[in-house]
Structure formats: C-alpha cells, structure tokens
Image (cartoon, rainbow over all chains, first blue to last red; front, top):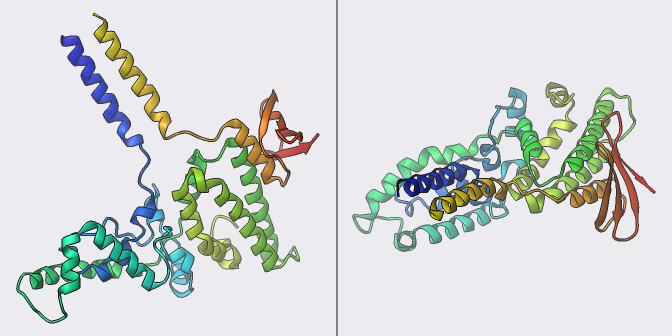
Length: 251
Length: 82
C-alpha cells in the first residue's frame, strides 16, 4: 500500500515536471491586447488585458535585447507597420479592425460588461458604472502609453527561435543558413559598392528567402512564422540601411 | 503485487512520452524534401533515403527523381540531381 502511494506520487511529480514542456500559447492570442484598452475602458473593471506588450512575438522571446539607439529612433520615425503590428492576423493594422477585435474580446470575456459599454452614455447615468469607469481609466492610462513604444527588433531572439524550432529539419536549417549567408554577403557587397546589384533585386531575394522560411514554419511553428512575418519590414530596414547594417553584427 | 509494477510502467511511459509531444519535428524524408525544394529542384515526396555517410544521402522521390544530398566541406548543403 505504501508502495502504491509512493508510485502515485511519482506519477504526479512526473506530470508536474512535464507540464512546462507544453507549448506556450501562441502570440496570436495576445496579439489583440494592445488595442483592447481603447475600447474596453468601462468593460474590464480595471482588470488588465492578457498581455500588454506592444510586440507579443518579441515579448515571448527568451532573451530580449534592447535595440541600438539608432534603431529605436528610426523605428519611431520610419513607418514600419509590419513591425509595429502584432503578429496575429486578428491584430490588424487598421484601427477599425483593432477596435473590432477589442470588441470581440470584450464580448468573449465580459458579457455583463458589454451591457455597460453599450448602455452607458457619456454622461453619468447611474452611480455604479462611474467608479468602475474611473478606476478603469486610471489603470488603463499607463497601458495606453505602452503601445506607443517602438517594437524592439530582436534578431538574436528570432535567430535563436529559428535554431530551436522543431518545425524545420536539420538539413533544411543548414540549407536556409547557407542562403541567409549568401544574402548577407550580397548586402555586404552592395553596401561596400563592390557589386552592382540593385536594392530592388536584393529586396526580391530577401522576400523570396523570407517566403521560404515562412512556408517552412507556417504549419509547424505558427507563432515563430508570425513573429518573423511581423518583423519583415524591420529586418529589411536594417539590411537596406548602410549604417544600421554596419552597426548590427550582420555587417 | 502487480499494481506497483503497473504504476511504475505507467509513470515511466508518461515521463518518456510527454516531452516528445511538443518536440515532434518533420520526418527525415520531409527534411530532405524541403532541402531539395529549397534548392529549386522538384520532389513531391521522398520515398527512399539511403545514407552514404555523415550528412550524405541518396534521396529517391516519388516522381522518380533521384538526388545526392550532402554537406560539402565548406558547410554548404549541396543537392545534385542524379
């Protein structure tokens, strides 16, 4: 009898030990979070959305590295919509769609709060909603500022995730690495003025290679595929700009 | 008397199987197929892969194409149509 109990404990311990091995929820699920605070101020009752990071794919990466100062500045100034938006398809770039996603999230999470959002006029009608709204707006203020921060392009994290993914086999990874190295060599030659290849041709090669990577990842590792897809313009910005390219470790 | 053995076997199976659930990767045939496709060569499905040595394979595709897939000394994956 004692042996059975100890073995049962062993099973529980083994299950508990294996629990962290489950794949983490894809960033798609949290991709709609940044848009939520604008719509659900009166709905959430002050509870934070599931995620507040402006770039969930980057936030899910194990080692976040702040971008260089030049990158951050250009990420703010340069319009990089693909990098700025979350990787989830639901988290679209247009504010109207984002608002729709936030409404859908509000409907799914707080059906009772939906009535507040629908029925509460701008002026104060009843006492209970007013404190909720004030609490919610007070807690949502910092959240509304957070999405304005430029999304960090973490090449090292993406690279590590590519290395670790099980969606691509070893031969395929090596072959992809060869092609990435070839493309980086072409960029080096372009920036050094050695090669007469045009930036348009480099963009075509870049898009083709990214398409290959996304094709390989889209079934086996969708979160990584969406993270790479959303970083496309940021990566291109780094490759195409001579200073950024040389500042990065790629040059 | 058999119950402890049963539980032990169950626990061992759980420990052995659970990590592999999230770690499933493509089969080697799919890996070779993707490698061949990345080089721009046609292969619908690898039906046979014969190992010649370390990182050196002969792949036979369902459509009849045969390829020599290997890693050369420079570390590049080379696909040669046979």
